[in-house]
Amino acid sequence: SLSMLINAFIQSIFLNKDLKLGFSFFISKKVLKVVVALSLTIGVSYLVKTLIAFYGGSFVIRGLILAFELVLLSITYIISLYVLGEKQMIQQVIKRFKR
Image (cartoon, rainbow, N blue to C red; front, side, top):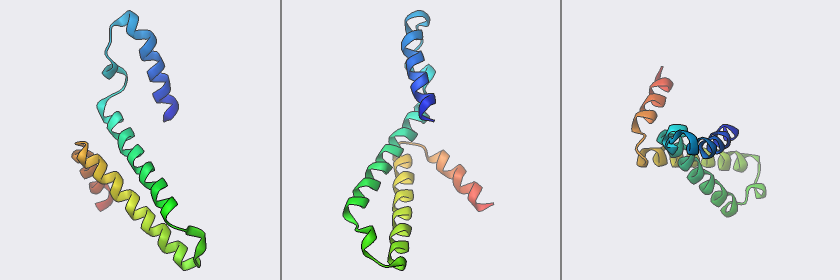
């Protein structure tokens, strides 16, 4: 969660002076990759919301727009993780859905 990341960041600042631990001790690369992928996905979400008029159509059109956004955001998140090198994480999630 966000509070955990902030807490770990603050602890790393204070404890770094005494323990000489690197930043990677407090926050792993995997967490940073997920945060970057989420940031890209949120950016795409804001971009899509500004380009598409959601309240202008009927109920069916709004449902189709929401489905399109869901698919687009899922694809953006998966591609972001793949590009950042988290192929194994994606494969684990796909295995869970296949069960």
